[in-house]
Length: 51
Image (cartoon, rainbow, N blue to C red):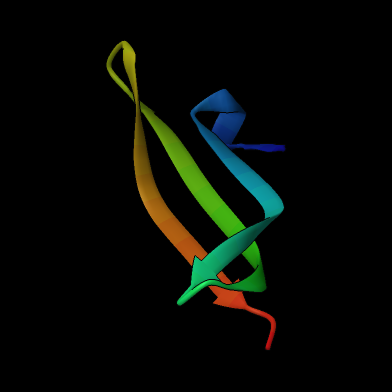
């Protein structure tokens, strides 16, 4: 997890497995969260399958 913009945004990187028609597909993912008022909002989501 990486803090950006003085703690107003966070970049979260990770890996996950997506199941498509019963087959596992490893993927890399990235989420960008931004604080808006008193709540956190998901502003971007990227998921890239590895095969």
